Amino acid sequence: MVSEGNAIRSSCAVVEAQRGARASRSPVRRAGNTFFKLLYRYTHSRAWRHNERLAHGVELERDEAGRLAGMRIRGHRLACVNTQMPLVPDLHDAGQECHLIATGPSVNLIDYRALHMPRVLGVNGAIALTERQGVRFDYYCIVDTGFVRNRPDLVERVIREPLTLFATPLVLWHIAESIGLERLRCRVFLVDDMLFPAGRRALRAHDLRGTYDARTLALFDAPRPIGFSLDLRRGVFDGRTVAYTGLQVLATLGFKRLYLHGVDLVDAKRTPRFYEQASHMQPNYLDENFRDFIEPSFRHAAALLARRGVDVRNLSMESGLGADIFPKMPWQKLGRTVASADECARVPALA
Image (tube, rainbow, N blue to C red; front, side, top):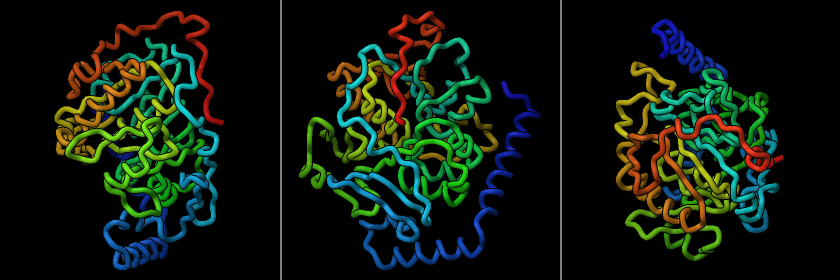
């Protein structure tokens, strides 16, 4: 448990980080950003509106197939690894496992020092576990610009780690504005939104069906346009939660055994994330999106992954995702084991 004194200091640190991030942008730059955003908004239709922050000072590179390959922000070229991604999934041994750590309060119930985790992917504020319990992340996923704006202190911890960050161009723009690209130490994989591709017109479900490829893309039969990507270079469906993007990342990387941590999705509006206090919570819309987007996305994805031989276990016993979607398993069953040489072999990180 976090003491009251630590909680107060933590809240103060968050406020100071947010003030520092806002102060780091000069009034001239802020005014310029606002001007170009409004200019873009009034000169483009709604189908292009998601690009309003990327229209000035951003250059996107795409390969011959139209997939994101690189990015420059105000002349600074990011160290992107998109062209080094394996062409197809399932390249690794069937025994390879990865842990996806989200930020639900159930994470506070887990003793991470008792776990052997060959590979770990974190999302949003999961990086707080590095200081709290010594967790080291190989991969990270941030697709929520609100998280970057509200918690630049945690984002800065992520980008200074020697990991591979999967993020949208818009998230990287916000990182550049609020933190600064000079602090970037991680590798970057540019993630495109399947329905709102960066620099391009928004797509509808029937637009996707025109380029449908069952080997790399699954479109689910549902009232809403939801799906699952098996090739990150084509893009991802956001599923209205970053954990769903993380699941697509791990499916593309070819992991065959996945453990979900902190994917609680229960009364999220009033329940602090594992690293938050009730008095200082970031806003979220998980409750509003659960029935129409989140639950059906995970349900369809679970069936797809099972057919592909991917074993997914949910370590959140009270998760809003029922055991009929992903089997639930107490974290204590993992324990710390002496792994065989094959089990200890680590999946090569993206160079």
